[in-house]
Length: 236
Image (cartoon, rainbow, N blue to C red):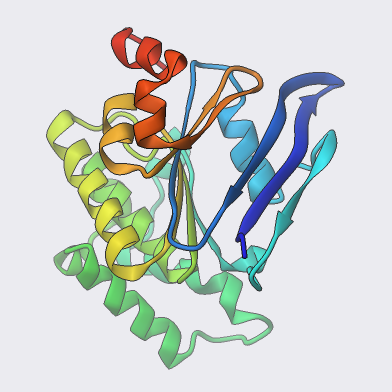
């Protein structure tokens, strides 16, 4: 059974349709990359999948027992977030807030999840460092650990490698791929890095203010839109 299904979904701002014709399903363990030019509706769709924005028409359905609070989210960072005055440990621990309910204190399980994800991403030595003093790549690994503390089922990511240098970017993509393969966590990622998308993702959704392609990466590479996008110098 599909974890997420879009049925004839569209999204709008102030009555103006931003993206339409969304018809696709995501199953447990899938790795989907959402691509397209700037303003094509990618980030809007992510907000819809997170239930932060309701569809103008159509529907987005959760299945297989998936709950909204079981989705981890790695957003695009703002300048204010990059300057957040908390320790790495505190930032990662905050990923457990959605699981805490009305309990006033973090549980042993919450703290164990932090330790597990600090180790998984190789950032144990950063636990007491102030988040705003970390490099961009370190901050992204901290935020990825935070998102993993919120879920064992699905991660949504909006341009996770934005602003990172090429070496750090490839390392981050490798870590995300390992999380998908080794933990079985479903990945839905917006990326302007089309070449990394086709290297790691199993599925591609291409938006151009409407759905112009959804399917296996191998089929996307052979498609007309895929060939054009991969061959061009596109930027998000």
